[in-house]
Amino acid sequence: MSSKYRKSSKFVENKKMLFIKPPKNTAHKGDNMSMNTLPDNFILQGGKYKIQGVLGQGGFGITYLAQQVMLGRTVAVKEFFMRDLCNRDAVTFRVSVGATGSEALVNRFKDKFLKEARLIAGMGDRHIVRIHDIFEENGTAYYVMEHISGGSLDSLVRKGTLKEMDALRITKEIGEALGYVHSRNVLHLDVKPSNILFRPNGEAVLIDFGISKRYDEEGEETSGSPAAISKGYAPIEQYNHSLHNFSPATDVYSLGATMFKMLTGNTPPEATLLLDEDFPHCPVGVSPQIWKAVEKAMRPSRKQRFQTVAEFINAFGGVTPKRQAARITTELDEETKALDAPPEKIALRESFRKYTVNGVSFEMILVHPGKFAMGATSEMKNPWDDECPEHLVTITKPYYLGKTVVTQALWKAVMGNNPAHYNGKTFWNSIMGTEAKQNCDNKPVESVSWKDCKVFIDKLNALTGLTFRLPTEAEWEFAARGGNKSRHFQFSGSNNLNEVAWYDKNSGKNTQDVATKLPNELGLYDMSGNVYEWCEDWYGLYDASEQTDPIGPANGLYRIARGGSWRITPRRARSSHRSYDLPDRRDNSLGFRLAL
Picture: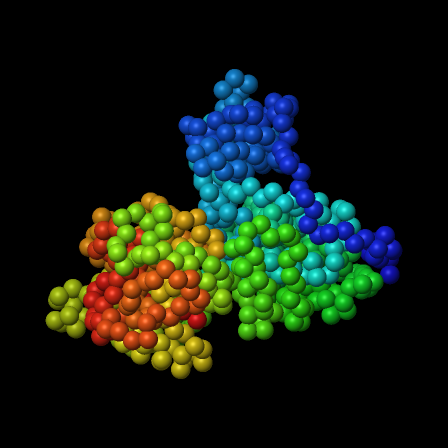
């Protein structure tokens, strides 16, 4: 075995803690002008953001430390600036294209920069960097993201190898992020230690989607990126530019290479070398089972690797690594305890699942357990009496919730009929028995009673062998508020109802296709507006006592329905608003969302 890849004795003896205290301010101050950057205290968006320093600069952009003034929040602002082609005016700081004839090239890359921002903003996994804002100003483009202050994995591994349990945890967390990315038919294509950062609580976060590629449902490439190679982390197909078809195994290679770096302290061998050379032997102190999984993940042949991130992670066995960073609040401690427990003894619980029934696919999003204030919290303006009192609720188990409400297409695939009122058929279609001119398959199924939903679920479970159900009212509200990622919006995903919901002012007095407004923090669509959603619970009044996994009253007259509909006012679209109806009532504003 080459000594280049042997774990040295100094690394075997190195027992440094995984999470080091980050410096108080890692931004460079005072010398911004020498870097052709914005100066400290520069104002963006009419005073919304104030630049405080430079965090880093690359060939295509500059990342600043900034303050979101009104919220008093520290953020990172990324500016599009092609170092070799862009200039900045020394007085106005406006960006222009310096090289004659390069305008089209610069504009093409600026458009890609904005597409990258929108792509990340649409991601709903906790281990993917969060985007707060996107805008154009000063002749260029910007996006605002969370400031992740715990340092990078690259900085960490420069200090020595990581303990196996720490490497496993980081790999699993980034694996969760990649699993979500792949569920959106996207390849990241640049997983490496410098693109993995840590939040103060130790969570690993995946950043930089600059060379990612998107694919259609058939796996054909729909968006391209400039060819880029991170030596040691890129598989052979990136060298050969053979990325025209969607294959998560490409990112599996890079994740395996990142784990190689964590366990050995050495840069992984280039993929071209692995074509002719044996894979390095298992280092001292690393479990053979773990090393075998890394070796398979990094095989030159894409077909011989693990085909999904979940396969790679599950190859580790039943190891359950625990986060070692200091807890920062009581709520975080409770959440982390719940997440550290292996749910249903599954080594990796995917953040996203896709199912197909009789040719119709639907998606389910993982909701992690946590604690939240349910009911008339301070952001919920003008609440009704039955939203009070506000009370603490703890959800102890992870669950999946439908990315959208059940569509007409899915109902037809399971039940063979379509009860929806807004099914595209006109009066004459109904009279003559002809087909509707409008395809409403992607609209919510409505005009279904609570009892109808239970019949549908029973049949779906018989078809799939799974245990789908309706969510409890507490599960529904926790998810609508954004779960553990909640930004405390009044509506599900925003304080601007028009961004996230179809309601009386914009619906055209009709239901609309699902997932055509913005999702909430978890990636769930239409939890405000479009159709009310039946829940499992009987309706009953709240009390102030703290509750764990509440399921509502033991009996009652009405069943809960939540979320508002296409015909409601904003007050009824708030995430805390409660509605209810008789279990056998059908209405063209009543639908449902699956839980699992």
